[in-house]
Image (cartoon, rainbow, N blue to C red; front, side):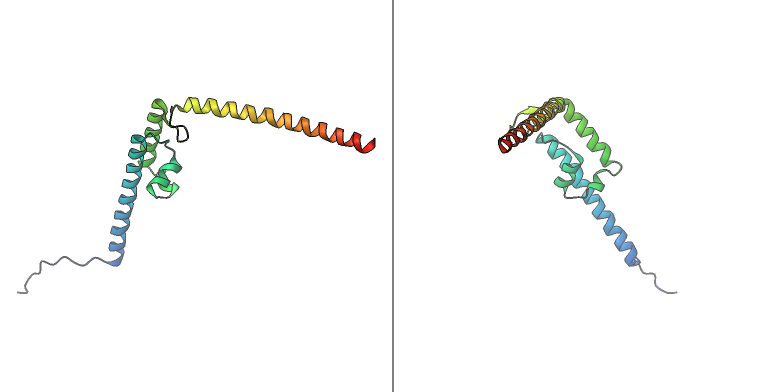
Length: 132
């Protein structure tokens, strides 16, 4: 009777590659979740792009099922609590930022209109000087 061996059968290259990809995927997902936690802890603004950058992963990965929901939950939590403004260091809410953005857009529109009026006046003035 032949002796039985207790050795495990060796993995095929495809199995080894699959296992490596699974480990890599788990590592990347872990880095995304850690990035979200770090950003919440540090009161840094959470966006999908910022999380991907922080975790060193592709933008596509942060939209993967499971991760997307966690990021959306963190964003909702941050919206309710506000976050740290990187320039001023103050705590601001998303509503406050939206108001600032609206006011800035209105100011830009007003300045563009004023700029166009001044250009027209300059053209008229230059035209009068050239004719006179």
